[in-house]
Every structure is written in C-alpha cells, then in structure tokens.
Amino acid sequence: MTSSFGAALEALDRSAGSPAGFCRPFLDLFPVTGAAVSTVGNVLGSETLSASDKIAARIDEVQFDLGEGPCWDALRLGSPVLEPDLRRAPQRWPAFAAATRDDGLHSIFAFPLAVGPLRIGAVDLYSLKAVELNRTQIRQADAMAGVVGRHVLRQALSELGRDLDDKGNAFSRRIVHQATGMVLAQLDLSPDDARLVIQGHAFATERSMMDVARDVIDGRIRFSNQDAGIEATE
Image (tube, rainbow, N blue to C red; front, side, top):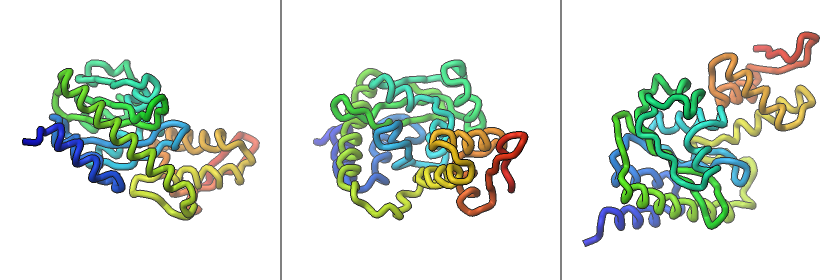
C-alpha cells in the first residue's frame, strides 16, 4: 500500500507542469488550513505560483510588499522556518504580524524551494488553529518542497523565450514590474527607486502594491516631481 507521504510525492510529480496543483498534496498530508508556493528573491523574482485560498495568496503578497516574513527567512537560511504561535511571537516579523493580524493566523511554516545551493522560493503553510509539526512532518514537508523546487526551476528554464506579453498566472507580480517601468519613466528614477515609490504609496494609503500598480497602469495614479517632492495625482 502506498503511504500518505508517497502519495503526496506522486501527486507533486503529476503536477510538474501545472503549478496550480502544488498546494493540494501539502494540505492532504499536514494539519494546516492553507498553503502557497512562490518564487522569492532575485533569481526568479517574487511571485506566487500557487495558493490554496485567498488568505494564502494574501500572506505571500504581504511578504513580498514588506520584504519580511517566513518565506524570506526560509530563503535566506535555506532551512525550514517554524512558528507554531505567531500571536505570541509578533516581534519575529513585526510588520508582517501587524499586517496579517485580521486574517486570524495562528501557526505558520515556510520551507525553502532549493535545487542544490540555488534557493529560488518557498512553500508557506498556515493554520488558523494552533498547530505544531513533528520531526517526521518537517522532514516530509522539506522533501516535498525540494520536489516542487525542481519542478519550478525546470519550468522557468523552459520558459526563457516565452512571449513577454504573457501575463502569467492569476497571482502574477508582473503587473508590479510593468508599473515600476511606468513610474521610472514618469520620474526619471532607477528601477529600485521607482519600485520604492510604489511601495511607499501603498504603505501610505494602506493598500497592496498590486492594487497601486494596477492604478498606475490604468492611468488612475500618476506620479510627478513637485517642489515639495514626489506627488501622486489620482
């Protein structure tokens, strides 16, 4: 009889060309509420590839916007990041904890997507109830993340020549990159500074970078240099 772990690995292999199927095996095997798989950092950019629900997608988006959270730590450390009680440890990721307080997160875990020494992203697992993963579950989740990492890297390499007009998946952050280019042109800034303008406006208006980026692209927000500094016209 195939073990539950073996069945999860087989399910991940079947999902090799379809990232939408990456989350289900984690939910079937572990006592968590939701999951998300994302690329993080400079190698493949920061983008959600798969999310089991709206909260999982939002957890990723908040971490991308803030540059803080378990997925970033998993990427940096190259090892699992485990927080069974986020409510008792807000100081670990203060901005992330504050931004997700209303989502009711209790436990959150992140496992790096890595292929050899190359770290390209993370799998986030969250629970609205108090949950702890035992050593066997941690090893299993880490091994599953390794399988997903290989699938993601192969897919990225196969898409090197893909049409740049492709908008990607439903959680794609390419819209932020496109808006960054527009702000760069409006203000004559570097790409990093243009992205900071979008990030700063999102923070000041208590919105996500994705929402602000959509408004920039649709012409609902335009940035300009004024005597008092950079101003946004809406």
